[in-house]
Image (cartoon, rainbow, N blue to C red; front, side, top):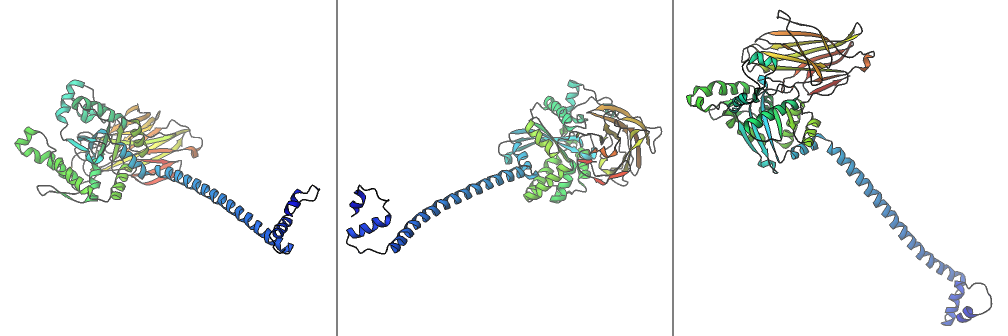
Length: 484
């Protein structure tokens, strides 16, 4: 019957599946079933198979799309998260330390008690060689740079800046007095040049560490006991070091021949390093950040990539760019003993309009604390850095007659006003300057000020006012303050 249905030449309507099924049952001698029931069974069977296949395929597509979407989200999150992490100070610090590998660096210990433009007098230094494994770095101290430095005087014969000539009239410039520039990048290049002549060693960068960092570190790690029983703490560090170096060392005639008065550092520094290593990593990290933010550490590198990181941290010691107004007060202790840390400084700065001109009134008060070692004159030369083109109107100083002489110079894209500003133990003295700014602000709302702190100095108290509005009152304990 099946063949009859398939082979018949007559034109008939298309054969249905029901007819084929009935024919097959008859061919096998099976009893015909109800067509409606059969259709239901057949259609359910076919529909079930087709639906199952379709659901399976569509489910795979949905799951695949979800996986792709999820992968994209995760990748974007990782990229964005990585970008944010890379911009954090913690990551940048790790990167900075990592990039110091394979380099040799001149590290100067800047004595802030004997303040110089970049943070302190370079009375001693070390050469730090950093291999691929940072933990295997070596430190070679030089506690008496005068030995080789004095030989440079005959070779170079570079004249000292004016205020230094008044203090050391018969001495040319050399390594120990090379950090006169207030921009550490310029000072570091000069130091590096002298170091190359006197010590005949190539270095990859210069680092200045303030003695205030050692004082702060002693607050963190606690007292250090020397072999003779002397206990060194943060409060007596400067005095103990001066006593050991300037007095006790020379009491032994053999030491006069050796001429290495700072040998106490060979004993002190390893003890400090050993106690520092016992501190938690995050504690040391926070300490390092605070030292950078407070201007205790300045760096310069010959490698542009390292120098860029240094600038990003704000520790390059460069003068910060400004758009309207700029102020930096820089002090230099010239033959004033180790008295700089005994002097407190406060700054009162007001900008106003006078006869159509923008005028700055600056008052600097310096107080030399009484009954504090050493009780001698703090012989200090001050430079005030203002916007390029500023013009001095007047200057007066309490306790001094006649009016101090002012050296006006254009340097480093700024105009500086330099003058002697010395104080004796127990004395308080004030200097007041008035000068015209090279801007004519028709709208006071456009005023802005960049205030920059000298590296290696104590906290100043400041009061900043512009056009009758108080912009800042409080401590100046950071490298930089930007005000609008």
